[in-house]
Length: 415
Ligand SMILES: Nc1ncnc2c1ncn2[C@@H]1O[C@H](COP(=O)(O)OP(=O)(O)O)[C@@H](O)[C@H]1O
Ligand SMILES: [Mg+2]
Image (cartoon, rainbow, N blue to C red; front, side, top):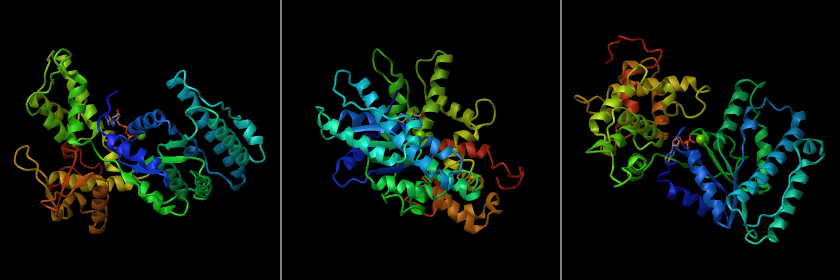
């Protein structure tokens, strides 16, 4: 699988974890920006170094289980102890598989039933971990390995808390975060916590429970890495020559903004088409034609699900109101960024506010949505024109022109 760019980002995480005062690492970004892909490569990188043992710690069953009653505190503890010890066991199993022949300290974990019957699962967890640490001191290459958990989709927990806010019979109650705080303070492990763009709000709301770390934002690929991701998978085998001619690559970078997911779906379709018509190469003409097909309605056209990560910060379902408002604001920007022909121009701020598409929102809501979209890097203000907006993914801008917000009455004179 292709993986481009991101090594500087990964190196920064490794350096942070290796520093003596490390409190772990937190980063977030749009849906499909490449967070999980980074974690996969980060784990390999960490396990390759003698300093770390790294595995993923899954929160998914926490975030989806029904509300915990106070009487279930014991259950929470047993579950956590089980998940923790099981994750450690899996890390060792995977390590042994990845490096056959290298020594691995012996370790076994109790069953979930045993931990449920245990009057003090928290203490059992600490004892087992102590035993493991001692076994490490007896195993060559393990004397100073640090246990690191990657926690992907950490903001699912926040989604579950928001769900509980709305309906106390559902989701996860905020009190659960106190339990989490206790586990962090025990410093049983270092964590790399990763989630969607609701992360800053999550950390702010639980700043007493979650160690306050500056969350990093993961953005799109730099142009060089984007270029490699476009060209490298389909180079001509004998010569290594690119199959993209003329301005084709630059055009794809412009259309996708360097977002790896959009590059991937765009280039997949482009390559399929090259095969279909038995062409060894592709040009800007085919690129433009594909872009045209993708943004129109119809079988080829991309649906809203391809853009939900741009329309909303986190859980698509929980944020339907914001999503609809963002859609209206983005539609206004798209409409007012039409230059002559296929040219794109920046959309002046006052034009957004005056657009009929946002008339039902009011100025305050529009300002708030613009701030959200700018924070999440969906739109940007060009340095040479700071009072104007542009949508970063050109494909999204073009798509919006053909896909007004669902409640938008067609035929209104706002075109
Ligand atoms: N650095 C990268 N190089 C190549 N492809 C990538 C890269 N990052 C992400 N992708 C592709 O983009 C898609 C979404 O990535 P993913 O890591 O699942 O995003 P996220 O976890 O942020 O939602 C995947 O199909 C993945 O293969
Ligand atoms: Mg992911």
